[in-house]
Amino acid sequence: MSNLFSAGLYRLRKSKVFWLALIFMAVISVILCVEMARNAVTDPNITFADGMFSNQAVMNLVMAVFVTLFLGTEYSDRTIRNKIISGHSRSTIYLAAFLVSSVGGLIIYAVSLGISAGLGSLLLHAAETPSVGKIFSQALIGALVCLVDAAFFTFFVMVLGNKTAGAVTGLVAGITLLTLGVAVYSRLSEDEFIYEPKSVYKAMQNLVGENTEESVDFYLNDDTEWVKLPNPRYLSGKLRLVYENLLDLNPVGQRAELSGWEFAKPARAVVFDLLEIVLFGAAGILIFRKKELK
Image (cartoon, rainbow, N blue to C red; front, top):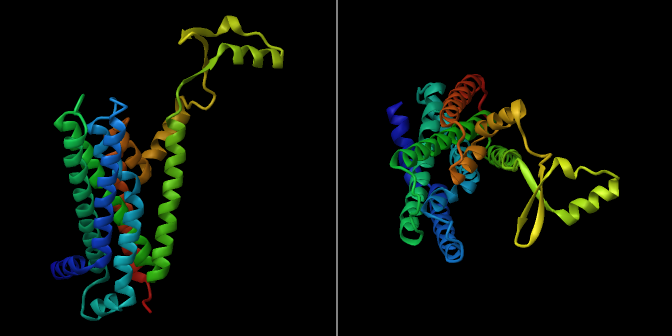
C-alpha cells in the first residue's frame, strides 16, 4: 500500500492535469478577489468573509476533470493491469488511487483557499470577521467535500475502466450535481415574504375581483407604499427539511453554503460527507474487485 501511494504521489507531482487544475483555481481565486474588491468600493457590505470561499463554486468541476483524467491515464497506460500482475490486491490499488486523488484535491483546495484568504485580507475590509473557530470549521467542511469529490469521481473512473468514458461520465455527473445544487439552493434562498407596490397589488386585486386589503400589511418606503405578501415559493416545515438534507448531500450544495457561510447544521454536513466517502469507497472496491480488465 505504501509503495502504491508513494508511486501515486510521484505521478501526481509530474501530472500536467494536476498542475493545470491548481493554476486554474489559483487564477480564479485572484480574479474573484480582485472583482470583489472593485465591487466593495461601492458596496461596503462586501467583506473579507465574502471573498474567502467565493472560489468554491467551480471546485466541483475542477475535481471532476482532475480526478477522471489523472486516474483514467492509469487505465489507458495499462498501469493498473501491471500493478495487479505485480501482486498488489485490487483493494489496495483502489484505496491508493482514492488517497492520491484526495491529496491532489486537498492541495488544490488549500492553495486556492490560501490565495483567497491572503488577498481578501489585503483587499477587503474585515468588518464582522468570523471567529477563528468558525473559519476553521468552514475550512474543515470544505476539505471534507474535496474528499467526497475524490471518492465520487474515483468510483466512476475505477468502475468504468476507460479514460474517455470516465472523463465524460465524471464531467456529466459534475454538471448534474451543479445543476441540482443550484436549483435546491435557489429554493432554500427564497424569502418568506415578498413586497409589491400597493398600486400593483390593488390592480391585481381588481383584475381577479378580490379585496384582501384588510389581511395584508402596508409599508411606506421612499414615498412608495408597499404590500407585504407571503411568498408562495418559500419552503417551510418538512419540505424545507427535505431540501436542506438534499443540499447537504450534494457537494455543490455544501460549497454554496460555504460561499455564503450559511450552514444550517454543520454537524449534519460532516456526517453526510463521511457517509458518502465510506459508501462510494466500499461500493467502488466491491465492484472493482470483480471487474474484468481489458
